[in-house]
Figure 1 (cartoon, helix red, strand yellow):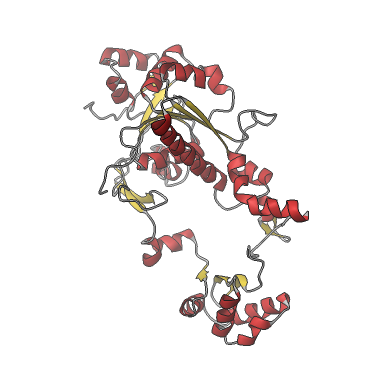
Figure 2 (cartoon, rainbow, N blue to C red):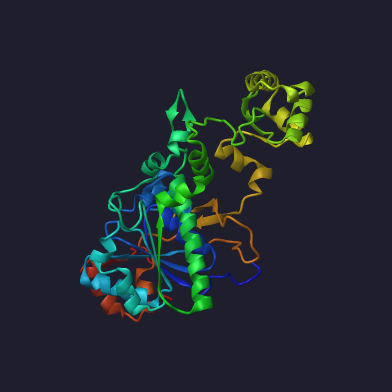
Length: 402
């Protein structure tokens, strides 16, 4: 890191759980924000124990948790108690941003609604994320990635007639919504800095964030009445020279989307006249036959030399193990002292002169409860009393307060 990060000095009170909200606050932490994660006493955020080895899950540092929580602080507070709510309001008064992903209406019932928080922090950026938005008949329904992939139309265009509708292989809706939340919060910070300190209320609908990316398909349907279904490996360009093809030992994806690219592809395959073939089925049959004759590596190198856009179909493990490809990723070593090892985890999704070179540890459950409360002015006796009554939980392996 060669410059101060842009969010240095910004405090975020993070009341989110699972994936979308924590991913967003994790990205903001990488931009320099101080993120205080408030967790519930029963530790019911399943992401802490999702993925990874048995000892990772036992420590509450599962693979899904480690990938997006580096550098955050963790507090455990019972929001259903008056004392716990008072503590959170103290935190809210000190925070620039509050992020929550309760089901719509829950924050109001807890006493953590926008108006209440604005009363203690007049310039707060209050950001919410939910499945279906804050109002309407679906607002109170639970929403998970799988459900939203089905409702959004994404699943209806993923797969083949033989397979039927298929989900995208990772929780894409959570991460699309998380990126939308990052953009909303950054825009709100600019708005506050340029145009005054009025409180702002933001809301990201996971459904809206995903469907927003499908604009070309929606406009095409409005214009023609036709909807694309079960795309399989059909290219967005609809051209027969693009798609996924089987090789002698794997698969390769080719996107020859322009006439010039199609001509270079056919020349590289040893059949220049194929570029003039008007029958798309014949083109596809010829390509299938030709690609099956050589290895993926051979075709990848041959098409690269011919300046034809193409690449092998890899598993994530193969990509990360590839020295040239992995070097292109902004990933960093995350030390996990509780396990005596480190993992490579994602950093920011872009390069910047202030991007972090190293990552701080991801927090154990409740690791920073004492420290944060002490920083707010609570004495040791008060903190001990709150622990004894169950209002807060402390990390049993806590570090000495600095």
